[in-house]
Length: 427
Image (cartoon, rainbow, N blue to C red):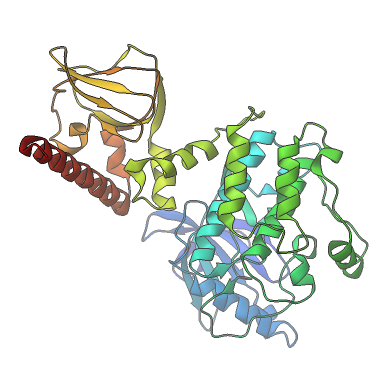
């Protein structure tokens, strides 16, 4: 049932109101044409017509509208459409159930340390993706990070973004003061380090349940951000290790020359923490898995978006030395890529090849026809970790992801053919 007097916005049937702010209202709606639920942010006509903030609201709408179809990343809320007509001004977005990250910034409801690393890592990779196409968010805060499930997050509200290719004058003073970088408080131009600082503040708050700087007014807050050193998270939460303290301190460094210069640097340090001593966590830690995928030769042609997709439909399995991974004559319903260890390919007990990390196994399940039987045994020569991909799971993969798999296997086949020719010719 629709909420209040609003039953329809454009072609979208309203289901209910999700939230309301000073300048806009967000509704859950049905997109019958695409058979999906969407979120619609309806901008207040009163705010648009206001003498003081009307121009700002108009610019924010244009900024967000210009990103429709561009920020296609699994950890960024997708913008489907933007409309400004005589009746309404609104943005149509992907609907994400579950609420925002704010609920995990309270001292009585903090996440495990491993889950904090996981969420911040995913945010860093998503914001890196945005920065590479010239988009700086400028208003990173817990309220703009949606939590879909456990540590599955999506960043939203790019209305305040600075666009590298924009021809419009940017509005100064954009951001939420507690998360604004020193440069923002000095009204200096924003860059990716602006978002790095803000994400550092979010990380501090998720670890401790408190903001690093608190004041009675914006002037007092600005003075602290520009002149006072923030406490270390471990001073407020003793279980926080030194490695995490150092990452937060560097992300929030007042001097941009000391702060992380790139998202890659930030993400690399988060991965190092995830790969170190085991941290308490409740969610599934994808941080290390994603970074491993980026290092494997098989996936070298895959972008971040496709790698996150692979993580969603793949299974990571451990196989002890001597165990059979694939058996001759069995149905070929999955293939794999070795993450670590070695595997022997045998036919009638004769060694055909030795596979190492980054190489694929059982590829005919992907390249051959459905129903093909295995033509060889594959046995773990050492303890093996493998990415297992069911052929049926690929039916739901995106076209570009399938194209990446096609190219990866084509490259492998060409390399094997070249090696075979060299062997035959005695070179």
